[in-house]
Every structure is written in C-alpha cells, then in structure tokens.
Image (spheres, rainbow, N blue to C red):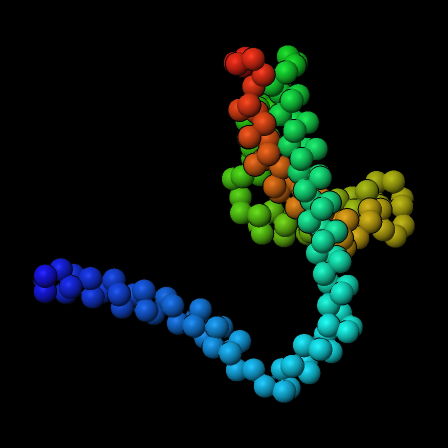
Length: 167
C-alpha cells in the first residue's frame, strides 16, 4: 500500500498546483465586506439589469439562429440531391475545426470597419462610411455565435435521417 501511495504523490502534487488558481478565485469571493456589498448594490442598480437583458437576448437569438441554420443546412444536404451535395456535407462541419474564440476573432477582424471586406467594398464601389452594421454589437455577436455553433445542431439533425434513409 505504501508503494501505491508513493506513485500517487506526483499526481497529487500536480493536482494541487493546478487547483491554486481556482482556490484563489474562490478565496476572493469569500472576502466579503461592506465595500463589496456596496459595489454589488451599485451594479445592481445601474448596469446589471442591462447586462442580464442583453445576455438573455443573446441566448435566445443564438438558440433560434443555431436551430434554423443547423436544421436548414442538415435538411438541405440530407433530403435533396444537388450538385456539390457531398462537398457541402463535409464543408458545413468546418467551423468545428477551429476553437470558437479563434473564429470570433477572425470574423470580427474580417467584418469590422477597417477590415478587409468593408475596405474592399468601399474601394470597389466608391462607398463611404460603414457598409455593414457594427460587428461589435448584439446582432454582430449573434451572427458570430450562430455561425460558430450551428455545426453541432447540423450534426445532430443530419444523423437523424427520416425513415432510415442513408445518403
């Protein structure tokens, strides 16, 4: 039994080191005083309701968008025969190949006012100002989340073929 405990010692040490950041965050929550309560009351009266509403709207809009895009794309490649269908069956999974935060940074950089897409459109068509709505907004966040997360719904719906039909 002693030999087994000696083998577990390095694992326990690594686990203890990895727990330190979590314990530090938990420890900061337990250092509650009057100033902390005042800050929380102030936030509750000013910005917290707005943040909660925005979070709720984001969740609902992303849920609806992911369901519509994921279900629609899965239905299209599963139920219909069209040129390029085999390609799209796999291409629609590509957002899963990158972490969502990388996709978010890429979309944001590509779609922002100074990004390559809007700069190209302004140069090509002689436009001035913003071509698309601000990507750093609630609708922009919904768009980025929907097109980062729809593959999860796409996979579930695509595998649920009607009448056991195989593609």
